[in-house]
Amino acid sequence: MTNPFSMPEVLQLGNYIYAWVNGNLGIAMLNSFIVCSVSLILSLTIGSMAAFAIARMKWKLSEWTLSYFLFGMMIPVHCVLIPLFVQFSKLGLTDSLIGLIIPYTVFALPMVIFLMTGFFKSLQNEIFEAACIDGCSIYSCFFKIAAPLTKTGFSVAGMMIFVSSWNELLMALVFISDVNKKTLPVTLTYFVGPYAVNYVQMFAAIIIALAPTIIVYLIFSNQIVEGLTTGAVKG
Image 1 (cartoon, helix red, strand yellow):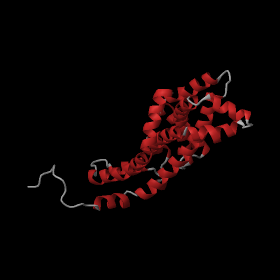
Image 2 (cartoon, rainbow, N blue to C red):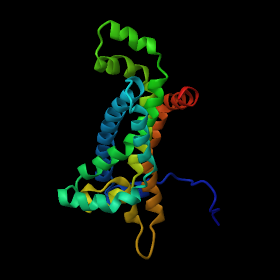
Image 3 (cartoon, rainbow, N blue to C red):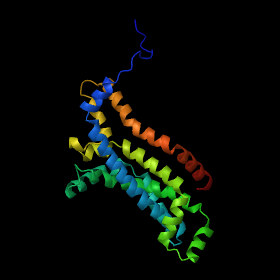
């Protein structure tokens, strides 16, 4: 009798092929990649510029503005899901990837602003004072000085946004009904039937879905550890 806890004697890839072909994982992975990439770029760009304005530009309502954005981190998605669906239906944004990119970007902004504000505040004032004396505009200070010096913060924020967007299920399940526009987490639910669960192919599909996030983490692991340490010490 074969030991059920023993390692397999022969490597079997049939379940991965079955999950990829019958589960339509190729299109789903492409949709997830498009949504995650666009929302990542938008949230990092908008959020970092807002964080720079809050951290380095002295104005009366800077701290209140930061608190206003941080309040968004306490709002659960479930509270705004139905109003968002109603508004997106009126605007014709359901069943489109844009209908996912917009909420993914908006919900990621508070976290980006929170993280990047700490990184921008850790920079020395003398750097920006010298740049202003040399004639640098506020945009040059951001793109040529602040952004390169906080690459670690961008890596940490980008990784967190990518993972949260890649694994998001609820909004993708509600807003998208077209099979060809489904994202990867929604496609994984197809392996669960009303009376049975295809565990073998489902676990193979889960491994395929986890591969991109693992690869991204392995590439940026050093920057993530360094960024978390810097944020804990100087944030």
